Image (tube, rainbow, N blue to C red; front, side):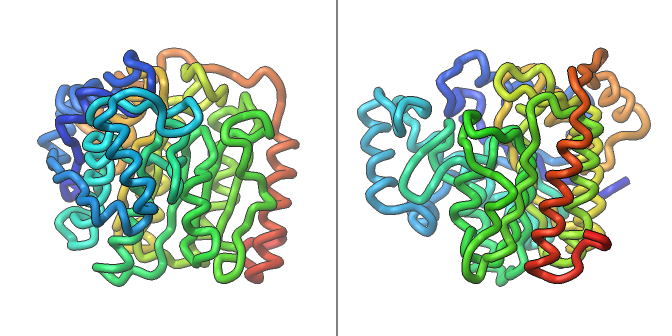
Length: 365
């Protein structure tokens, strides 16, 4: 049996989410229930309740004026934190601090060796920027976790891989000029939120070549998504040699999601989880911190996140594994057109660009 993994869960996750869609908020409760019902916890994982993030933690990556604005809007309890996407509500400041606190707690647990792997489903708020909310994200917990890992644990080579259906624009902005490797695989077109994340966005200054985007068209299937991952990410991590791997596992790329229109399946997410788990053990002693993210079909998100946690926790065999297998999709969604050539051209362009910057990361690229 693998060493236990930490499932980070604050009770306020179940009270409400940060999106304006009440029906979606139950995804956190449903995930916790499935992880317990399948027996992943306590057989392979341990539930850890995190403290709220301190204001000082937020101020390390967010402007003081913005943090004060969120606190004021939390008292006011109405309106929006951005231009109409991310709602204010009574207690939004504390709810957002819980998400950040979960990611900080997971980072500490992994950095200190209490667990090799930790998963905070309440995190992954990758659209938040230094001075603004966006896309239902208030504070960027991933950026706060990276700050902690660098400042208190002296990690220098931190790799972030983002599987959300939307581009990790906020996270990218934080590290665009730094040698923190950020990789985002996402649906891309200029009219799809947030409209960023093309291959040409590769970083600046010290960070030139450390921002990596894999833009994918709508209707990309799980097989094509995995092929793009396999073509880009393993060689990139072998070159970078991360000391810890952070992975945002938004589940809105699933074919049942109403917003994104990628055609991933629960099997795709299991395969991705197995791949990043193996890469973490190959390159950074197994240190792996997972976050949640997008996903607007709550039952589907819960199944995806449970399968992901099972895969990184070694819970795919025996009685627990059988229960996990029962969570997989009974039906599949096939793309309506062959996108192989289009995606292959994008990947080859990206590999050529990275080889031109860094040398031969990719053979024949």
